[in-house]
Image 1 (cartoon, rainbow, N blue to C red):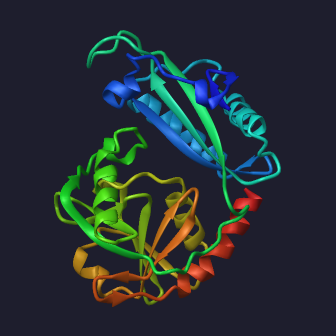
Image 2: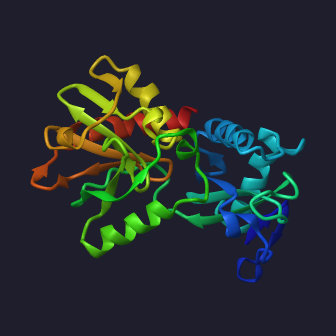
Length: 281
């Protein structure tokens, strides 16, 4: 089942209009949410990011789009898919209504949400081999649009194909200054000793919800110091540890980059603290 503008219907019969602007121009935004026992992890952060992104893209935010309204719309699709007692992955997509060419005829929007099951109700560290490489065919623009979670993800798609073709589990994206920006599916954190470093949003990385929460979490721990600063490819091979974060997986340790193999000590320490933060949120 999917929820389209508040109406639930079967997924296999749902279709978008031919002139859908999300399809034609990538004129849309989305949030990917982890929901466990009808609790949306870090919901306020997701909601505020969505509202801010809609304003930046000059979409008209409906008066009904309160935090409580959208939460109920998300939970309704969870219930409709019989996932109230199981962990679920929900994608909430917002797109400008059809009409016009590059210039839209309206700034009014529609939304659709869908839910699929997840394996575990909490974040679990996956320590299987996880090798990454730089993706250098195309670069991320270091501007505000790159920080938004829009449907324009073609660099992530092509990078994922490259990773699959070459036997990597993920790739790291660069901006035009050849700075490491993020992974294909999440933000990147680099560990050297007790110092943890992550690229700033001005370098073009996604303004990730888990990135924000990890920065908050690490900032409260005496054992580590955190720095938001540019990361060069050279630093990757000097690091003790690399890990990737996103709202669904939580923390994904990187085991290898080229000839460098990484530890998982800090990631193992942080994942339990992240689960505690999610439960108390």
